[in-house]
Length: 103
Image (cartoon, rainbow, N blue to C red):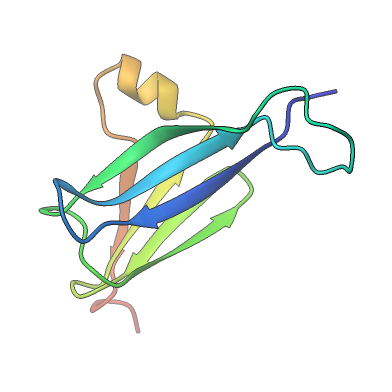
């Protein structure tokens, strides 16, 4: 059986990052006694200077969509390729469109 996990997005009022996406592993969805305690690991950090307040987040399959906010930006992150992006020293964020230009 493949290990179960869940992603959770947290917003911060202070510090370098506006948002941080965490992957929580060892998630026990049954009534059985857990074999291991849940563990949260920061997967991606969203710096204040690049990501506006008020963004919404939506996950479809392995894609995380970061939408809107004060600057109306749209980014997509493929959660399956995050580790590869960091190993290759490139950003996992792909800018999709400027929402001002979308009719």
